[in-house]
Image (cartoon, rainbow, N blue to C red; front, side, top):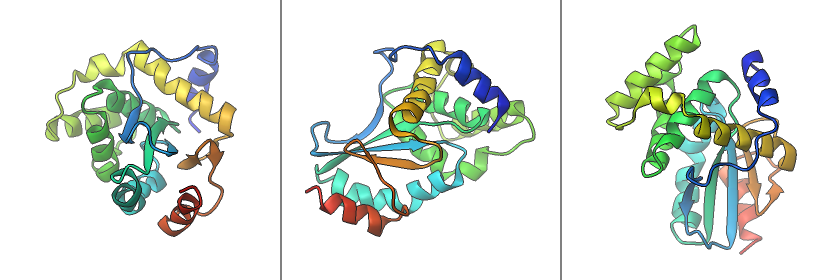
Length: 191
């Protein structure tokens, strides 16, 4: 893991509950019987695969039907993912769309030898996709930064998250191999 990110997490380990203005990125019925939490890092290729290969079926069969909701929580594994998380979290009315776009087009922006180069590619990508965001303001927003770091801290503390993606279903860690078949079996037991 990136040393700078570890230092940030240690420095902000004392952060209290997140700002009420910053909202979770959620898809589905708020009162659904099943709550799925996905701890993810925006630079994680396995997380991108989850969004391409598993999430569409999950959304069609469980989320769009009102059976389940999914909360996307941040667990950045490096500074590039940390900054992308802040961008995804910046505009609550577009957060789900931004998150989806970042995962589905991960290779378009996750490139560069430095954080500055990756941030520049991220900024160009966000502009190209038509999201109206004040990039510099979002990257430097301390409330959003605290919110993202809190997700990571809470994931480690409450669910022993140490890799991404990690799926939590009704407050229990999903321990099987992450594919749609295994996920569906677990969800069907809860209906």
